[in-house]
Length: 205
Image (cartoon, rainbow, N blue to C red; front, side, top):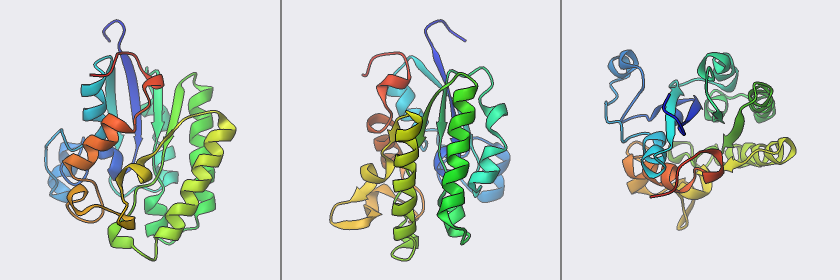
């Protein structure tokens, strides 16, 4: 790794992966019919804005928090920063949010135990799940903010950044191509504006 470069391990589900425009695994792109546009990931835009950052995209489409947690150690190998993201698939599969929050907390604690700087991302608004899923999303985001405060780690404000002020609980239409995931423009907003500068080297462009 180049000198003065910070390796960020981004661990999560399809929002970390970059669906539907991108997936870090070519086999997944083929299986799911997703694109290969690297701009369809928030990590691309965060690295572009802060050239001292290098990202390892460990996003896997469809995974719950317990499945994401099982991949943490491998994803975090040789990294300096860990971003934890997940929880929407727990909700989509009808699971309660409290165990999902416990899993997220355990990942934050494990990352800290490995000596990493850690941050955790909020869940996004989910247009296709609105309105039934939105109270659960908001509740899990409240739990995420509480555990982040208790663990002393920053929160990436993904929900706030992509919520349509004219349609609370949903993303703007131009920010989502499918009602589930961000568009390239949505990922750009997350990467450029929601990633905290304190987690990496380099100056904003």
